Image (tube, rainbow, N blue to C red):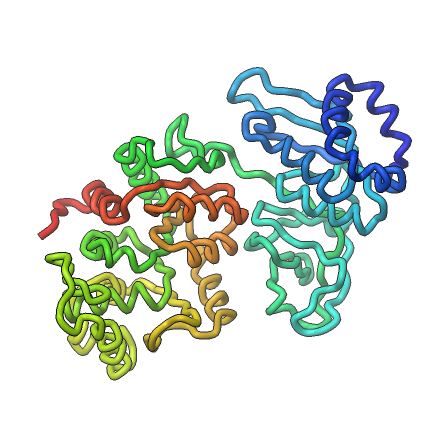
Amino acid sequence: MRPPDRRARAEAEAPWGSQFQNRGASRTTRRSSNLRRVQVSEVVEITGHLMDSGVLARVLDDVLDYGGDYTIEKLDVGKTHEDESSARIVVLAESDDDLQRLLMRLQTHGVNQVEPGDAVTRPAPADGVFPEDFYSTTNLETVVRLGTHWVPVEHPEMDCGLRVVGNRVHTVPVSDVKAGDQIVCGAGGVKVVLPPREHKALGEHFEFMASTVSSEKPQALLVRQIAERMREVKGEGGRILWVAGPAVVHTGASMPMAALVENGWVDVLFSGNALATHDIESSLFGTSLGVDLAHGSGVEHGHEHHIRAINTIRAAGSIKAAVDDGILTSGVMHAMVKAGRPFVLVGSVRDDGPLPDVYTDVIEGQRAMREQLHGVGYAIMVATMLHSIATGNILPASIPLVAVDINPATVTKLADRGSAQALGIVTDIGLFLEQLALELVPGYSRA
């Protein structure tokens, strides 16, 4: 740790620092009594597109929001749009505990200590309990210094702990930690790496990190770019993860979705009870929520169809058994079973039934979802807010994802919850899936 008197020296050496310090001072008037008690400091650094992405401003705001202070020692700004910038900042806090929490917070933006030292581990005090000062993870690529080596963290995931086993480090959710597990504590000995700002496969100006959400973008162009990226992922041997909600069925898009499954463009599906239920209802009765999908009008006793569909599958024993017995003959779930593709259905308190394949224990559901993330190179999330956020929470930031919904708030919230790599497309789900099927499925046409 460096003494706070280094701050005055840094301000004298860096004109840029004084400009940002003045900016910060006006924001910290309400904390002036706290700042007079600052006792500890650390030098941190960050490299990337700091200005046009706004990340530097967010870093400085977080320092102040956590009751700290800062001085910018050095700021090198890139000259062109493609050039990266870098900053070295002295951050100060009232206590070492406050500083450690601040440093962990800053790492969500890709900020690292200049001299991180070695990682400190402590045993978990009980099953399902981390040590009090555990390191809280981000979804960024992370490395931990053990002795003389930097060890990459396996399966980066946000809001977990870091468990050290021998010379390996991996994330562990609090629900899975066991008493005595060695858990990394504090921010020392930990570094994170920001993902590339632009994804190479989607063209020079297609920016995943921008997380822009708009209904006015050229949707056809975006669909073509998504299709091209899907081809590249499959060509590299990667898997494509889909997260889907019941609007896939409500909008009449089960047919293009099933065609994508049948042609190998869906490797794993995450969803809830509703998508599967209404997909099966559609196959058995031709309705979704009791509405005739061919004519768009309600049918007599249609409100019963979804629960009768659930009862039919429960009588068969499972979705697969219903397919094998010839009861379920079409739809997305039928296509998933026939193609041998795994699906994870996680329920909620509002579910009817549920279907026998649905996880009613959300912790078990999370574990099942994590088990299916191996080899995933691309994620597409359509018409579901809760399952999209849940999936985004367990995905590494290195996996690009697309969120598609008619509601802008749905695709915005995914990025707001920490999945900064998300691209939001605001459009009708049925039109999106139809166009994607036309791009990827040879000879596709709606019957």
